[in-house]
Length: 386
Image (cartoon, rainbow, N blue to C red; front, top):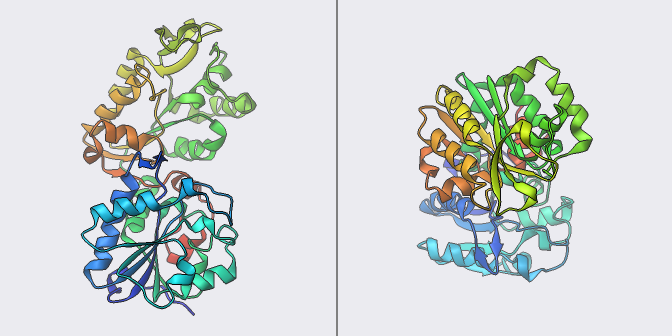
């Protein structure tokens, strides 16, 4: 039977290293390299003690069993080759070509090009395991996926948790169980349906909860406010009302004013009291009075968890609320954590990433972890939230 191995003991082995190199790429250009930079640390640590590496990752969501050149890992290879002081090879037909001679570092083509990857096919898992001596899982962003390269390999070969994964779990556990109060949670996003469990989890734990995006709009409509043409999820109005009628409602800090695209025109931003929004307005950010209100709360909190930009950050001035709150948190004397997703690029664009305690590489995986969902590879590694 395969055994769980301590990462520090892995030396002079051929390591099958599962990373999360799934980063945004447009026209062959990497838009944000946050996950890649974090993964470089693991690669260097393993190479420092003489290991050969077979690096696996997916990119995007290709149709399984087909090759989609727009989702090739070749741009990732170019990035790694540039940033590692090592010879590195890119292998497209890696299952067939790596059985005899394994270079020092090999980046393998998109795992999701293979039939059986997403279904955790036993045959594929076994074939992958035969390429190395040990499997290191360091891809928190796909820890909730039971696939051949994220879980199945560990059924046939000794396995270990990578340092990035351990750091992610340690910080996530701190937010769940070991946080200092007061705790403020900021939850934003297009749909309340995707974050309802997360919201309820942190409503129980938090002293203050700030909402943004379509989630905020849904709650405003549930309270009877006119939200015009703003993003909203009508099918979850009843769920919102249930929270509004609960004891936890008093923890929610609602905005006093919002920034609207008046008459739905992006070039015509207007700050309005939430009671003054018209039927053809579109709420895209919080206003200056709301920012001031949030600031007073954030400055006294000992722990802040933030998931999701407050406004339409793709276009000024609707990014002001998010930017101002980011600066306040960055300068706060507290444990501050960013829950991956769309918030991390905003923080990096502002040059504030080193002023936050923890930036997660996981988006959906972090949400699943907080929700207590079954995450098979974490259970096997003894790192699950149970």
